[in-house]
Image 1 (spheres, rainbow over the protein chains, first blue to last red):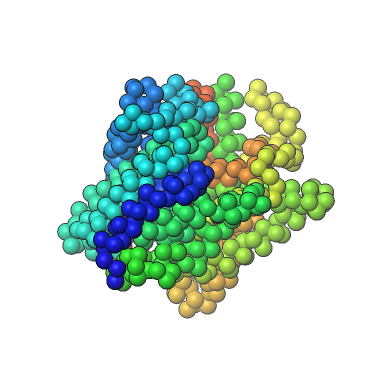
Image 2 (image 1 turned 45 degrees about the horizontal axis):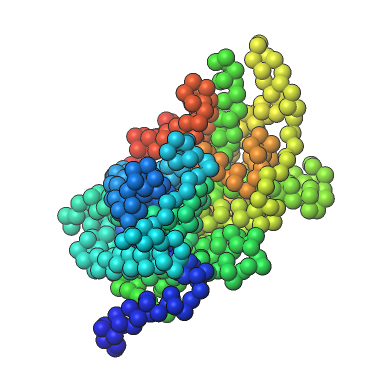
Length: 317
Length: 288
């Protein structure tokens, strides 16, 4: 057993050494992985933990990106303030969307969230006045303390700590009353209700959390890519996030990191098969859902990644 | 004006109806909601193209080739994915069907390229004037085929012993196997039938929309149509499709063509919330 202090010191040391060792391109990749992992973390909460399927994640990401960019361009609000504010508003939207789960579940919920994603995307395309329509819009640079962060190696100092903090929160909340309530709902809604849980409120809060993480991730991805294109926020992209979650493992927050790392690093490894990339991702998703629905986080390391506790507390799939 | 809008929207509606029929057939026959069905429709259209461009067949042999291959695809989907997942959770099955659709779409994108392909109409595109309203034979064909498929499926389910076996197998697998229905064969037959139907729909729809890998997104309209009709009723699927087509046509003409799709997705959410049994479907009481 390594003491926690040692792990923390090692983590902080790695955090500060990495930018001096790796090239800008790799720093950009790391930021991309961290921001994507945040988006997928939302799915871990709503689908992995609470058991509610959601195909709305790309809509939350889009709203988060566009919301923070519009607040910054039209209202002059700096991104460090507009991203959290937007995420708060999007989480309210998520809470409202979560109210759907009062009446519907399973494939109807999948359909309704899919329709929500499609509506949001069309809304972004047709509000030309403020979103730039189908052509998209540029994202103003991320400024904080008089510094302008535009490159991956600079945004790293913003994105990584935020991601680490939110992961720590989710990790702890999973073991809390709230997390256990969501687990109970996943395993049996009827039983959870019989135990006196306000099932609808918990499910809606899980959706709110997925909206919050999606929007924070969306805002960070937007400042990383510096341009928003509405084509990136459709149903296809929602399925992509689900694929990341499934391959990484939906029952653990670490699954989100593992999945994001694979989906972002794989294109580098497969450079000569660039046109087959989409097919490779799709086959990965199909293969994992059929053969290993608990994802990579459940392989070998499960004891250390908090998957085992979820599994012994009732099968997920 | 109104009559013309109605006639044109019935064509769009018939497209939705044809796709909705496939959804309902799979749902009614095997209890699975197939989220990749829209992509299977696209794949069907592409199979004809592959037959023509890659193998060098002429059009009708290519159609035959596509139908044959899609039957094989249906068998593979059932044997390799739906059968192993028969006891998996609903969540896993939903994601698996999404994944199947994505695999087909990305295969097409990788193999045939991301751009749209021209696809021949089966009938003439020249409009014929009937009582002052322009009617396009090629569009009429889609309407006719939708109703023909509806009629055939209706006969199958209501009038033959096989249809009864299918319904029994879906309703209660154990009960059906006790009275001698081979459940796995029934499900295999449904998947083959639905895949062939997807290819027929793809061939009819491809010239009307543009045949590109993303044509499968039309699937969500098929869903809306199926839900309007109750998801469990074949007649409901056709009526739902045509209703949706007309609503979209009216919304596109009198409100805004930009808002057309948003309106139909809003209808989807509204119907799911307010009347999940659809316009025609009977109320299903869920046991806890």
